[in-house]
Length: 168
Image (cartoon, rainbow, N blue to C red; front, side, top):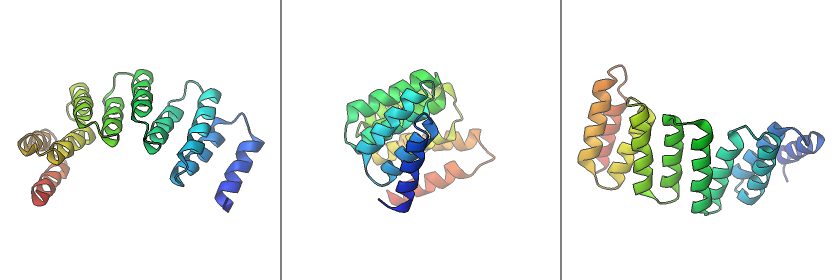
C-alpha cells in the first residue's frame, strides 16, 4: 500500500465509528480499481450512517465496477427512494442504467428527471447524448434546441448540438 492508503487505513482503524473515514477509504479503493474493497467500506459506512445517501451512491459505483448490473441498478433505485422524487435522483439512476448497458432504461430515467424539472440541463444533456449515441439524431436535436430556447442564458445546449452533429 502507498502512503495515502496507509494513512486512510490508519484513520479508519483509529476511528472505527467514523463513517467519513470509511467513505474516504472506500473512495480510494474505488479510484485504485479495488471495487470489492470499496464495497466493503461503503457497506461499513452505510451501517455507521444509515440515513446517509453517500454510501449508497458509492455502492452503486462499486457494483458497476464489479460488473454487477442488477445490484448497481438496485442500489441506484434505493438512492431514488431515499433522496425522493427529484430530477437529480433520476439523473443518477439514468447514468447508472447507461453505465451498465441499459440505454432504454437510461432514457426513461432521464425523461423522468426532465418531467420533474423540465429545465434540468444535466438531464437534458445526458438524454441528448444518449439519443445521439443510439442514432436518434432528430430527438437529440429537438431536445437541445428546446433546452437552448428555455435557457437563453447558457450556450451549453448549442455547443452540445454542434458537437453531436460534428461527430455524426
